[in-house]
Every structure is written in structure tokens, then in C-alpha cells.
Amino acid sequence: MTSTSQNSVTLAAEETAFRQIVLDHLFRYPGLQIQDLYKLIHQAAMASEHADQDIAGARDWLERELNSLGEGPGEPVVDPLSPDGGIVRVNLRPYIAAGGDPSALLAAFIRTANEYQGTLANLRRFWSYAEGMAAEGQLPFAPTELGGFFSKMEADRFPTVHHSEDYKATYHPAYRVIVCEFLVW
Image (tube, rainbow, N blue to C red; front, top):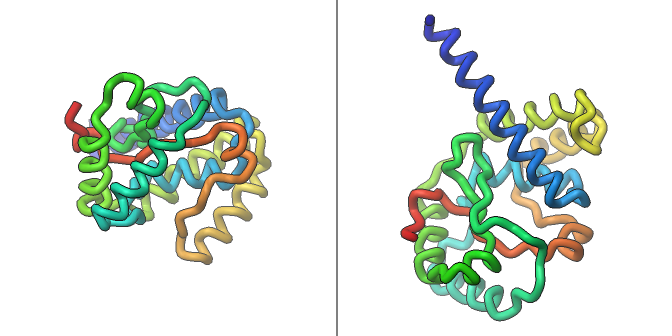
């Protein structure tokens, strides 16, 4: 097999894996909006590199969130975001319920923010997979909607975004995005 064909196979496997991640999120969060999809894709490509790298600030944020978790949807402890499973969301409610250590999660989060370097190439490629899904009718968004949203994000230099108000009100997201191998279980 030539290098070019190996790369094609690798990209095809990556696309298949990423499409499944998107479909899993759509199944669990049917009210997902375009900005929530963008947030998922941004996190898959960039992880938490945008996050507050100040340990005290990150600790206070985590403690406040843990103290006000409340009810939420059924979620796995770990939600893969990147096709290789290296970037994940650790959902706080099931993580704590399973006896997870907040200090270990905080350390993994800070380490991810400080050490992980995402790429715009991955962000663009993952978005193109979503556009393909939209073109095939697998997403509740028209390809033109996705293209317009992505163009706006690109013009704004791919900022991080918050979840949509509907998503927050319905699903009460509470998680940390980390490089999975940084979390000591």
C-alpha cells in the first residue's frame, strides 16, 4: 500500500469515527444547535487550550460547578470528542458519582490547557465531515447553514463559544475537556 492510499484509509477511518461521535451526541442531545456542534468540533480539535490556565481560578470554577451540579441527562463518564479518543469530555455528574477525584480531573484539565496544541487543520477537517453529514441529511441543519456559521467563525478567527441557551437549559452541561491520558484514574 502506498503512502497516499494509507493516508486515504486513515482519513476514511477518522471520518467514520468522527461521524459516529457526532451521531452519538445528536442522539443524546437532540436539541443540539449549530453553535453546540461547532463547540463539539472546536473542542475535538483544540481541546481546552482556550481555558483559564490559572490553577486557582480553574479550581474555584470546578468547585463552584461541583457545588451546583443538580440533575442532568444520563451521560457516560467519558465522552470521546476526537476520532482517536485522545480528547474527551469528562462529565462531572457521573464522574463524581463513580468516585472520581476532582483534584485529578483539575490536574488533567490544567495540563491539557497548558500542553495540548490543537490545529486549525483538524478543526477544518472535522467541520468538513459535519458538512458532509448535513449534505447527506444526517444532521438537522442545511449545508448552507453550516457553511455560513463556519465562515463567520473563520472570519472571527475560530473563537470558542458557549453552548446555546436551549442546550444549557435542557441538558445542564457540566464537564471538563481533557487529553484522556492526562487523567489518572
